[in-house]
Length: 121
View: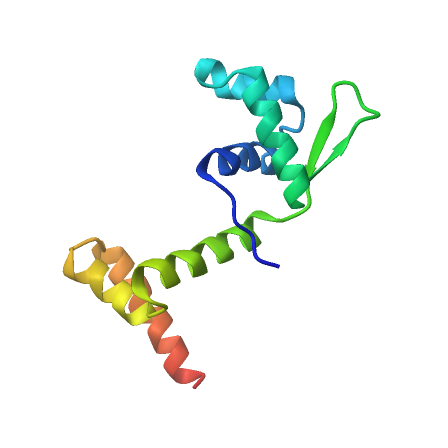
C-alpha cells in the first residue's frame, strides 16, 4: 500500500504515534495554531485514507494509528527519491556531500554502512 499524507496530516499522525489519541489532547499539543474544525477534518481524512481508526464509543473519540511511523517514513523516502532524484540514491547522497550537508560523524557512519553493504554483496 502506498502512503501519502500531507504535512498537516503528518503533524496529527505524529501526535497519534506519540500516544495522543483524542482530539482535545491534540488541541492542547497544537495550541492556537489549529482550530477544532480543522483538526476534525484532517482526522476524518486520515480515517478515510486508512491511516487511523476511531473508537466512537469512547468519549472523547479515541484515534489509533493503523500505519506505523516507520512505514510512512519509508514511503516518504521513496516518494522524495523518485520525485527529486529520479530514484537515484547515489545522486541524492552525492548532492548532500557536494553541499557539505554531512558532518564528519555522518560521513563515518555512511562509510560503515557502505562497508557493510560491500561485505554482504
